[in-house]
Image (cartoon, rainbow, N blue to C red; front, side, top):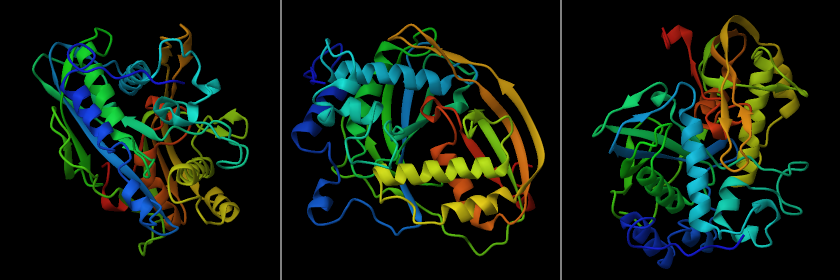
Length: 366
């Protein structure tokens, strides 16, 4: 996939484009390069942690925007992918998967990652995308002209998060419009967030980047804590689908839920972070299967997306609601909490599989 020059000026360019060009010429598209040259592999923690970046993109509406229920993530992801591709690919490139220079293409790396020979986990040809969007708080909302809104991006490639490409694409997307009515907006700032919704740094002020290096990624400890946990409640915020074997599971039995979380976390870590989790996968699976589901209040939602490239419709349905589990849950709690950030199940990159977990003993979700 050859790259098309990114033009400045008006239209497809403007301040954000020029800022990105400046970053490119200064070598800032690989923020962790200096650390890697010093012998650091770009990761900062031991074998039972997971690292990722959180960014919040702030916008101000220039017209009325509407986000349909359960489709906010789909709207953001679909429009973003198209803009990203237009910015970096030549017009006659039709398939990133067979491009001769896909290894050097930012679109292919971020949106259509796949294993080169000898890379990645065995048997995994198409890699999970190194990001998810979080926009469910916009579901069903109408944003009037002049009002501010935001959505978050979680990036799992801690070695090269490619943030300038995200910023450039979202700035252009806002100018062109998003949502069913193609309402326009302006990207006003981008913040790097910690795990407690605090701002670790402002990285973009709407006109230029403010720092040469990102703050360190968030680090989630996956080791078992000292607290004894016997009951948890899981809320499936956006439509969720998980497979059990070759079938889509009707209910999120705990063994299935934990298994899909464990595998996704380990795969993301292996491909984009410090390496696969060094844990007893079979033992964890057997202990998770012993946890009982004591309450299950779910409803099935139906949604779909229309591909702008192929014209085909793809289902995006799944279940939403809550489930409660009882058993020896202490070792699983870190994985459940990390599920909030990485998602679980199928089509997470389209906004599906967003979940939250609470301890009923602490009154969370009550």
